[in-house]
Length: 486
Image 1: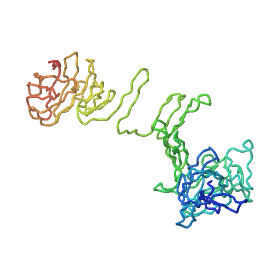
Image 2: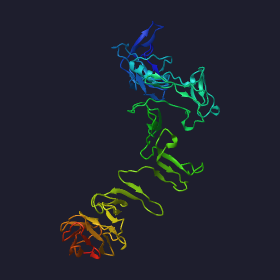
Image 3: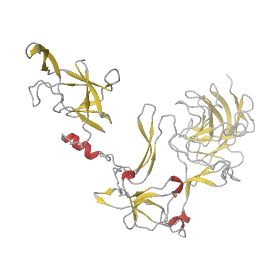
Image 4: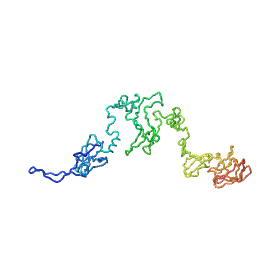
């Protein structure tokens, strides 16, 4: 609280004037005239000599100042008067020095203070404890020591008008101290004893009823603040005006919210689902855990996070890693083209499915990165991958579907392509995956239903035949090989 100084009948700056003689000899007294001085800067100190200078002052308009000037006589105040001011908080006396001269003690008016301006009045009204009164100052508050209090006690008015601590087990109808107003209407909060037989659907220990706001523009119901190293207040957790939980980190390196498994020596590790995001149907028995975390003590899913619906991620889903020495893979999505990606920047561990259903693994980060097929394999001669058939062609449904295998540096084609419609000569019948294409155009002789002709495989993997097909005709690729090396 700031106390007022100055503006009184004795609050003037007086200087020493001309010499004067008072009386007649032999009893004459030599002296000097007193002069009122205006426009002199007046500073304030904590002691008559030495001490600390007070600079946290407010002038009569409420403006922060470090000193005041004596009146020059042109306004409402007399020449030399020290204008009213407010001292620092809880300071009731100060030592004033005019123009660096000797200090004079000023004592504050410690009685009731009358506000002077509209701004002071607004500040006074907005201050919840403008008169310094707290609940503990009220004569009818009963506040037992902590050892005699019950967990869950709240301060309120019980039936009969007594103000004090209310236990949760007391009769319903108790009004909490200073309840909020909703839309300007007083609404008393109540503490009612819970019905322990009703379970989770029973009455709560404490209920805060909030008017819903679709725009989320109601004042927060509860706020938790953290003070930074520089004294700033940071709101780290709160329930908004709709009673919905919010959280934010106090620093960029902090985690805003955590849910911990049971403490290891306090009943943990957890053996069941200890955290979940779930549906909220009217019946608690119908709840569905959309996403649930299982404890490390679970018998079959230790430490698992399980989703009961589809998990969708815009930038892919990472799976596996750090199990028996394995590393994680990043499932990025499905491509509309054949083979490994040929553009964009990719990271080692990225996995893509091409249009033919083949999996491709990025083995080295880059643009477009280094890729190896993850289905069919590039090193094992017994691994086969279906070709991507061209327009008007289908793959043989038998065991010898059109595919390729790679013994060493030699690619061997096998299987049958069947024409489902008329196919012109030179049309693309199939496409080979990246990594299994010739470095230069390969020419071979192949057999078809209508005879034999030249089969061409280009460096971009396209397979063409120098003869046309009618619907139902076939092309056999068995035992056709070409070198991958130039």
